[in-house]
Image 1 (cartoon, rainbow, N blue to C red):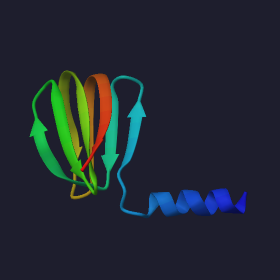
Image 2: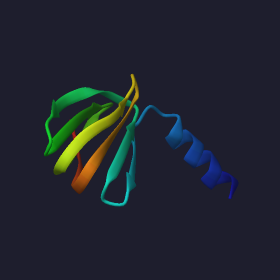
Image 3: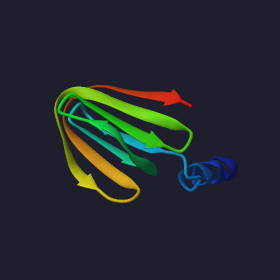
Length: 83
């Protein structure tokens, strides 16, 4: 179990994006590098080495800081693209 805990801590502190999906109504993205596109149906978030694309209806940013954001609405999909 020690290896699993160590691996989990490495993942949490590596600077890689951490995405938490809460039902189909809220998504939290940690370790982001900025917003690429935003309207009420799509949110594209630049992250270290990838992009997170959230699509849905009535999307609204409810929190935004230098490294974390939260979006609410009816979430249809969350996608990762590399590059």
